[in-house]
Length: 422
Image (tube, rainbow, N blue to C red; front, side):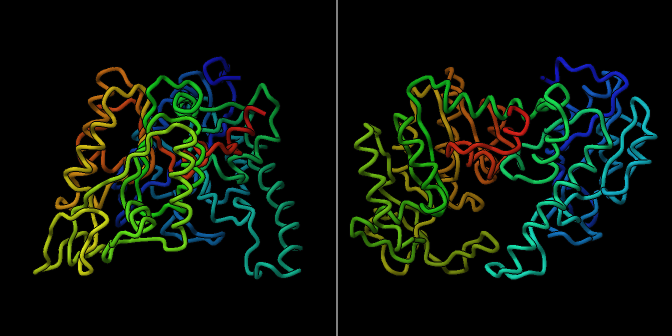
């Protein structure tokens, strides 16, 4: 069943959204996630249905934390939806009466799902690795099923539209689907777009396919890199992982970030790239600094900034961005690409002194997109780069899911998708 085909008239739909929006002093500072869910929510209301919205906010870890209550965003959601009111259920497990009273066109929002340990299904207050933990784990799984069954009882159909949590087998993202038959559970519009975007870069590839992997650590991306090596034509590796590769070849990287226990992994990536006929593109030079504050994203007073070869950085410096030669090399590698994936910046883009490498990547991707490439941007930092450089409307698709996107690219099955598709 698809959301376009389903008849919502007179039905109550319980929808898992991702309203984990950033807040400051009770005010939403970025409503992107709310706006992303609007097509699905409005479609249900326009179709004559009633809405039960459920989401999490923050990481309360099974405890009630008033500062993370979804009650503080209900008016903003009402305004975004264009409805007079969003009713609020302060107890997810005791919302049956409120749900039963809903009329077509009305909206009910449940309290933060993660106030309940049953949502994530993890035992609380028990030490891992102990016999007590294993017993508590079994009991919690049963409690999680009961919690999901309770949530399901409020509605006639279930819509999963929270891609950012699709990689978690939580009560509201996967387990709940067991209590609806195939004709009454479906993906929302946002989820459909996310799944299609991932499919475009993994299974519907137009070549050349170029992937850009940035970020600080090889270890956090190794599964993705290994999966991509069987699919891409070119793989650009940038950001902090540059220095692990440089160190693996005996280079001097000064005080740059490095994973000394992953030098063999870096060399193996190079070996696999060669075996798969993949052009591996690594930076040759770096913009380096003698004093950078990662907390404030500022250069410390009196610090020096210079450009050095990435494998010949003086001890007092650390590499913080791709140098001009590297930036040009990355841009050149993206020329003529037809499928592009970008995850992770080329440097400490938050500071204007170290954003040129990421900007070069972003501009090259925008240019290739204008020439017909499909470009998928994922991961918070890459999305932040696009926003900073004014490129959000110049790429094909920006993913809302960080961990979910990475696991999908890695080739893993997402529980939130599998629960719907079977």
